Image (cartoon, rainbow, N blue to C red; front, side):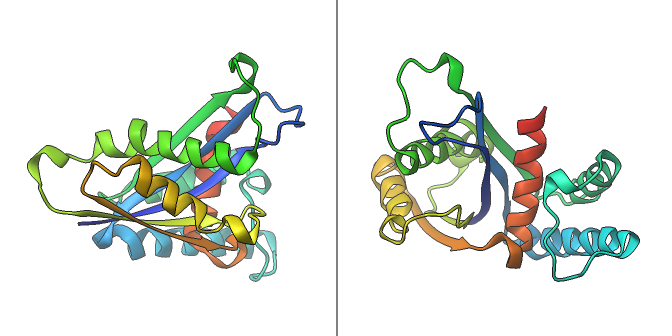
Length: 191
């Protein structure tokens, strides 16, 4: 079984950041819903750009959208049976230890997203089939040497499970799945 996951973040995890919260999330789907979801989002995105006379090549971030536009997108996307939004929010004020290195904490946050949000929603008790998680993640200023880091981390964390992980990084400007993940996680973050 293949599970397609689109992930972005909101807030800052840098240890010197003054923001109180950090969120990681987006959505997951299966093969049947993957293209349908991005197609719906692409049409909604184009409609917003047409109404506001925004260049089609310009990326619209979630903070550029008004609430009614977000609600309309969420209503359309939720019509797809295989769509599942996932978000994990961290309150940095109540953490007992400081974040030493942002990429390590990001990896940990994604692991919690899996263990707390994704895996419980998959009914894995009924299958012995290998699960292949295909992650698409915003580049988020990742250092080149750390690009393989998350994939290796997840494989190690879930080494006792019949899971495999494939992580690919994209520039959100060219990936509608990542743009939708940004919309989801940023909406939760702002709330």
